[in-house]
Image (cartoon, chains in turn orange, red, yellow, purple):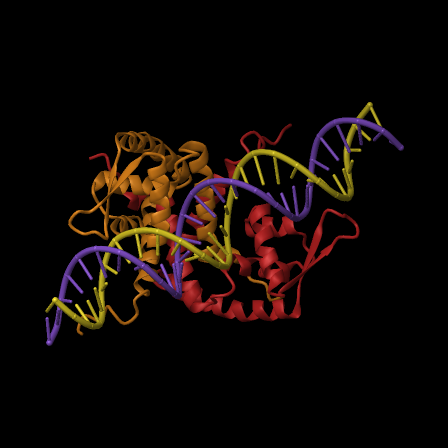
Length: 153
Length: 153
DNA sequence: ACCTATTGCTCAGCACACTGACTATTTCTG
DNA sequence: CAGAAATAGTCAGTGTGCTGAGCAATAGGT
């Protein structure tokens, strides 16, 4: 009767896409390190010494979630966490040698996984796919701060 | 040095898409009922009397997760759970009047939200978007049971 | 200097989402 | 019909992901 077709609901499709990705990640990349954890390692390879909040911003995780992820990576000995002597609120984050090695290893596997994941699409379709995903996500993100982006004060 | 560009990683993009969706859902649809919960309500409007496992299959959730979601909906009084007299393992699920009302109300709001969410894309792009999402998810799902889909036994 | 606002982080609480181990029931097979 | 395999749910454990409350440190304004 009043039921709806979920196959045209972007939220439902987004969830399915993530599940599919999770499945492939577990089998092809790592069962220990998760995809968000890898994103954090990657951010710290690009910019060593970042603080927690900024890492969260780079990878798109809020303060609570990033704290969890970082504490797990710390427990595994993949990164070090030091109080910033200049600003006692911040923790400065830096990968250990083990962390760098892990990132390097996973980078290779991740690339392989992405190939398999995107294999059903042609090169042009992949480009379109990225473009569409970006535009939708960016637009929704822009709706977050309603009054702000008016330029004039 | 060895850092990678996450903007071409489908897993990362899938996560961002879900976050964007979550944000919009909370502001435009409901803060109480989540998107997976709505999917369950919707499945039971389409096919009343389904058992837990089948509902999970319809909406794409494993047995543990669907159990959680259903128990929450039960606590809110949106559905009833009765042992199948024919098969003592199953629970048969059916929406309450309140559940049907809630589904109807959220259906309207969800449609509005989807419009806003997809507004950055033209009608043709939306069709392409759905097609690409489906193809990638289906392909990954197909890799789940490696030996099975060979037709002959 | 002092008071206030901001900022970085933690913590509690809620809700998915998965795996693996277990229980109860049914079904299949000899 | 008895024993084995399959099936539906539960439970424990782990890992995102969010909000809101609170705390300590810094920065800004007077």
